[in-house]
Length: 406
Image (cartoon, rainbow, N blue to C red):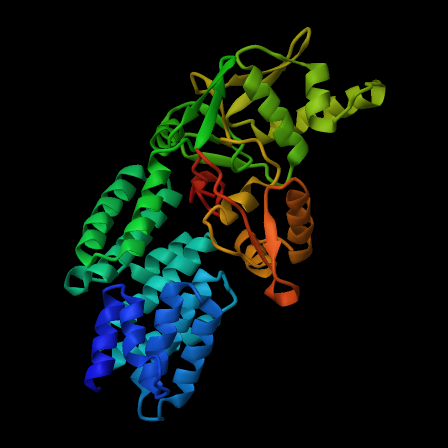
């Protein structure tokens, strides 16, 4: 490696892409192409970066397996930033194995960080933990330590373990300051905001209040029966009854939970569950049937008793019933939560992250765009969707597998 390549690599490691380009911008050898690709990625020209990294991988000779593997890892990072979640995981795994086999421990660990971050985006928390579980980052550069701690914090936030998340973010901040890379510092600061902004609303006893993530953790650890409108489930003492595929039952139990300790009138239940404006005998009959189904579903946690005016929810072994609602009432809140990270997403990546069909998400995005909540740029396969951050709220509870207890 010549002196210019070495100097450019040091500049990139310090977060100085212009310094790196000053040294290699006019060169077309494989190493220079790779460094130019990384520099362009740091400057935000991600399509140009991807093209340069692919050219570099092809330019390296058959005996330069480590250099080619590094190009694959760099391209995978660009794909992650552009939310190209379809980047082949096997290519990244092969590159990681090649780097580990040749003793490039730092870049092999970085490949595992990228795999863990992809798992986080798609809600696969166990896989994310396994990807970084046995890494010893004490010998790594400060930037790598900060990246590792951000992944640890992300897993803890999704599992609602606020103290481990706070500790990891503290370590990430120290490592980022040591590295002195402004973009890394900004990423740590943005991640830390999730602990300081409202994450949910607690509805109960005729009142409601905003909760931080640590407050949500405390509510979930309490002995209350929790109607969880963030995940459409009913929870108590670690047990969970999922109702995401039974929207009528969940609408009923939410209405009953919001009215507790009082009863919920029949006309309110009919409106919430069926959208009925004009009630006839068929609606009343259907309400009785659905209430019976809800009794069976909740039999281990609560009973539903008929009253003169409607129905009331009566917990069996709990002192109270509360409703844990989203901080903002929005039909497409989970979709907006993903877009809130500030990156540009394709509909295929959103479909993969949310486990929904691409056409369903296209319809939802078009509806949100008409309301001015999201906007698109590009055409065809290059079309991407973005939105400004939802000011004042953290979206951690809206993301895939946020609670990690399904």
